[in-house]
Amino acid sequence: MQVRDVMSASVRSVTPDTKVMEVASLMCLYRFHGLPVVEDDNQLVGIIAEKDVLHGLFPKIERLMTDGIANVDLDREMGNYKDVLAMRVSELMTRNPIAVPPDMHVLRAATIMVRNRFRRIPVAESGRLVGMLSLGDVHKAIFHANVADKLGTD
Image 1: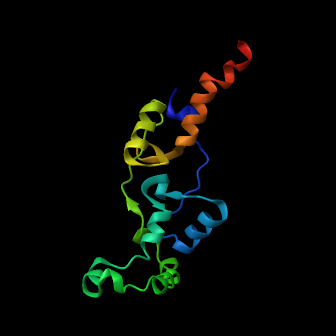
Image 2: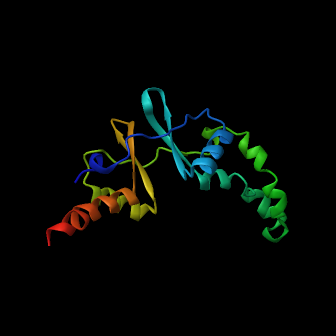
Image 3: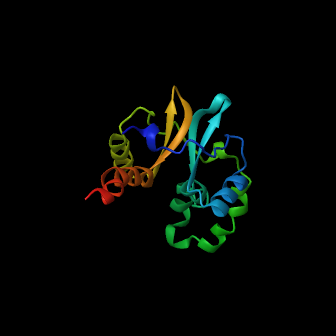
């Protein structure tokens, strides 16, 4: 069973110039945990995840070194969220993401996801985004292949 057999081909993506406000809205309204970032001709250039957006709220290491971690006002840091929303995706995204090809075996792709602690991974062919694969997609496909399709045969 190959990745192309179970991936989601209909994928919402954003560009590096997209405002983080749009990304955060998609994440909160549609429960997206991460979105692929593409340039012209659907070239995959990054991933923007909830952790990337929230990371924008964390105090910089230089400030922690001078102020000390105990002196950080976390409520004030949360108030900086509007500044994060004004940023562009390119400022927060993870560049050059790991992707899998559509002709890879799904279990090999799942291994890559588990080893890297990903719940989902972009599917790319010649650098172009063609889909997304989640651990849930893999599990569901294996379940159907081994259990659901055989329930009525015993």
